[in-house]
Length: 273
Image 1: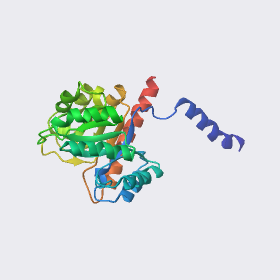
Image 2 (image 1 turned 135 degrees about the vertical axis):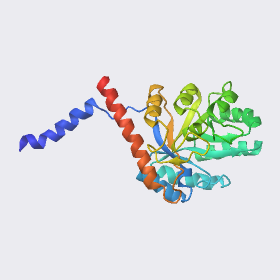
Image 3 (image 1 turned 180 degrees about the vertical axis):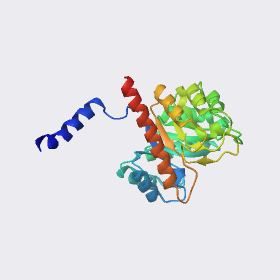
Image 4 (image 1 turned 90 degrees about the vertical axis):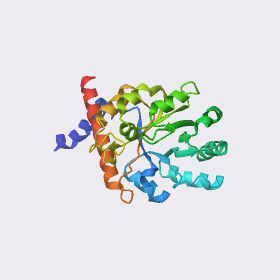
């Protein structure tokens, strides 16, 4: 009996010393648009259920026009659940007032990044605010039909000479829908990738629809592998747009798929390391 009782402990100690867990430089998170049909409380609950530690809130969960006190108390709900409220978005900025307000809102909420869509002529002002506040602005590409930022490159070219806190939130679904390879585009502009929206689409065309990760046309293992190779160290957030009224099953499947791929890639790296 002695051996049997000792073995599990010895085995566990041995395994943990060899394998400290996935050496992933980035963290997984949720873009709360996923839970657009639900309250902030339900959003926190579902984020916790998935074991996620990072959350980016869209305005339906933390309205932009809340009072300072209310922004702070709502943000506190997220943090007291053990979740890092790291960002806001997608936030549209159509005039100077909206830019100033977005940065004030993010600062009050203690956020590190605004995933945003500012008008082109407001980029200089955004650059000034980024420098002042230390809050990053990650410009979100929306693919075909987006006049302002159809592709990651369209945003990159406008900010590449600005403060390093002016960068991109690459949405890989919209990138694929415009006929570009998300792996290549993300890798090309990695010096400015400040956030990533991960998802899958059923076709690399304008009419492409999002679906469970692993069911579509995007090479998710290849994408994750590239992020690891490039040492991407920010957040990869799930923006699951399908099943708005019942997102948890498909989102759970998507999260499980990504975690499984990362674990597999980690095991391969460990074996070759």
